[in-house]
Length: 113
Image (cartoon, rainbow, N blue to C red):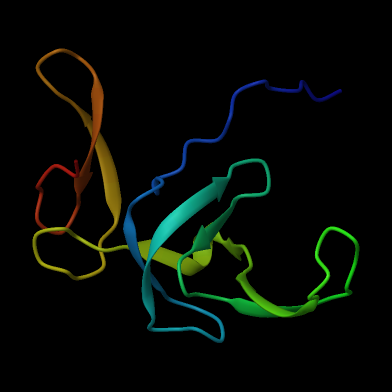
């Protein structure tokens, strides 16, 4: 029997990070992460994976119409951009002087905010 873990998965991408899409219809586009859905391992990136939704007129919204919104994209399809060089990079973790883990770029070795 498997044990269930209450721990959330460690993700290398955080809200506010600049990322590039490496797979899918929007491959090569860049944007800023607006939201992270940890349970589903998905991210919502500004200007990426735009979907159209048709809204019926209702009492609350009498205008209705067609709305364009960003849909979630799987976290494995995006890669962090190195703040120093602007190129994609893998992310590592190392402890600082106080013993707290901090993210760093594996390409340049520089800390990521």
